[in-house]
Length: 234
Image (cartoon, rainbow, N blue to C red):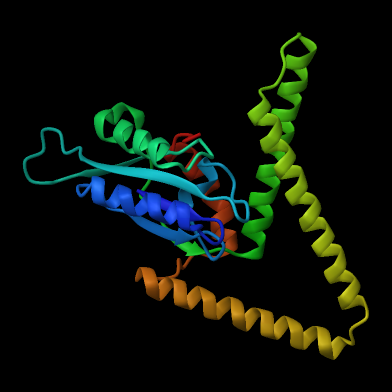
């Protein structure tokens, strides 16, 4: 099971993950800092959002069939669709994965690469599109006489508030930069990039992984292949 950390993980979630590790010794647990690194399969999950954690469970099966000389391992995955990170909810998710292989969807073997500004913008756009689609659906349901669940309304309100905070922080940053000299802007960007690279190297050493060698143009070209190889995990 892999925890996609959207930011600092609270003590409650840390304690729940520790309990899962003790309860399910047959399951391997790992985490990844989604602010610095991303998996190729993420485009099939809920979009990355700062301070929002996500979880996925992986399963590998022998799909060699009648072949006697070659072992073929297939990877499948399922994503956690709830924002409830209580121990009981997480246990239910793990139990379902252990007891029902049909719950998993086949996927290409995930690759890891650094999260770039461009990929973060894409993730933000997917999140906005998903929120807009949900809002349109909710409006249609409301017009039909159905009311949206209270929990969903509260979650939407939190997302709107986070967007406002991000916009406010962006505006304040732009105002500060407008009063800076070109030299000060260049120095600030240099320090920001150095800090970003330091965090990326530290995270990659922690997980003993290498940086994906594909550039952005190759990533764009592989989108169609990914659509064929991976099924939607949402």
